[in-house]
Image 1: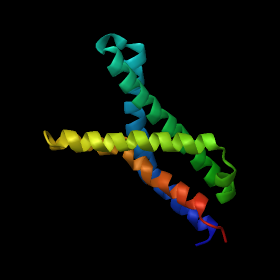
Image 2: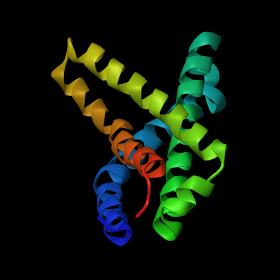
Image 3: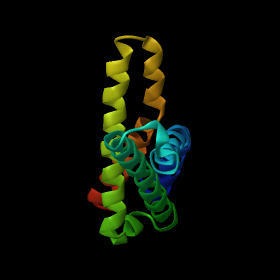
Image 4: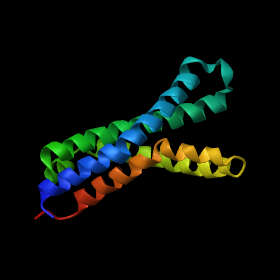
Length: 141
């Protein structure tokens, strides 16, 4: 597949999965940071650090994904390979936060199947993120 077609395929994947994951995950992450650091009266110190750190990791992951996506869509594989380590590290931190969301969703689903809606909050970003990693590691034509 030529690179132009791969970019279009990625753009569709980013629109379908990325926007959903960014909207849900970014919203919950921002709420987590807000509750933990701006309105801390509701939580004890350990809970504030956990929720605030988890939310910050999610926001960092969204930022890394946005940066890498824009680099790929503008410059192709060369843009991904020239991206700094911070963007890939941010994407990895966000993926760890999303894995935690998956675990929490299945843990909560034992009591209420409605908890599976949490799978729309962040984990859909893992699919375009994995595609970016694959595109960076693959050889170009």
